Amino acid sequence: MADLYCPMIHGGLNINFKNNNGELGINQCCLSTEPLMSLDNDKIWKNLKFTSLREVNNQNQWDPNCWECRQIEAGGLKSFRKSMLEHYGKKYNLSGPLRIDFLFDRGCNLACTICGPESSTLWQQYLKQNNMSYTNLNNSTDVDKVISALKTLDLSNLEQVHFCGGETLLGTSYWKLAEALAELVPDAGKKLLVGFQTNGTQSINPKYYKIIEKFHLVKIFISIDGVEQKFNYLRWPGDWNQMTQNIMQMREKLPVNVMFCITETLSNFSLFYSGEVAAWIKNNFHANRLGDIVEHSQQLAVHNLLGIDAITEEYAQVIKDRNTKQMLPNNWKENPSKIKKMLSETEKHDQIRGQNWKNTFPEIVQYYSRYLQ
Image (tube, rainbow, N blue to C red; front, side, top):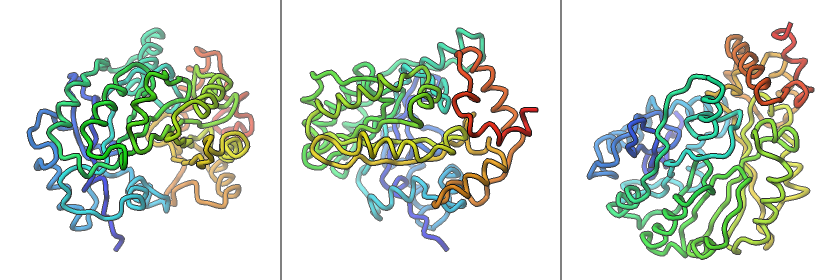
């Protein structure tokens, strides 16, 4: 039997603002479908849900809310659980978190095809302006409430915090939180890694450089799912030239304790072109100015319009033939209803946005011919 130990179950904390009632909530992992608990709980780290979840994991059993990692591993691919295991190893009975993910601000200047209104205020505006239905979501933030909660935790074990969005480089919320963490985490300047997930279109004001320098390492995770026109399509209404110019400037100007990682989400439109981002990194953005290598990670798009369950058998076979590493789960199979919905919704958004997926991704059009007749 496989060893199912999960560092996020034993050492993870996800502080999240997704509740529609405007209250902050927590669970152990940003990928878990476990309902968020109120952040007002006096026992944030040793609450009953967390302790029960750790006991189940100690018994080497999957929690039902960890279905995404379970599905990815069933397909023979590396899950978030396995990546965290490589990084942290096995640690039990921790007095506080090893890693905290923060997601409490939906403010974003893009409406990416693999995203939605739950993570982007521009998506919400876009749907409203075009009379499309969506759930009304609370977009306010309460950074002070998050900081107050952190003060109740033992942060002596904390090695990494990750700021998710929205777009984390917009506004001041995440910078205020980062400044508080520098004071609250013992030896933050010697051990704490702070990550900002960004779409690459926003610059960092020099006034924040002093905050960056208070940490051992700051890593900028830049989301790039395609190059040139493919980027413009997938990261609408982002502009490839503006984005690349911006990250080049960040590389030259940010403090020396900043490193970069390109995160590439492989959707049904970008799977065919999966080598293009890697090639661009190698030729244009392979290291920071001190020579530290730029990391490149890939993940499969799931449970969204352009997820991998919206590709055809013909397309899947090409992906398998063209790639030396496994790109699709072993249990993948064509899903006609998903494909039809994807094509219908894509055509609708293309008309509104003045785009055309067939022109942007011409090589894959033939693999959808059965559904385009």
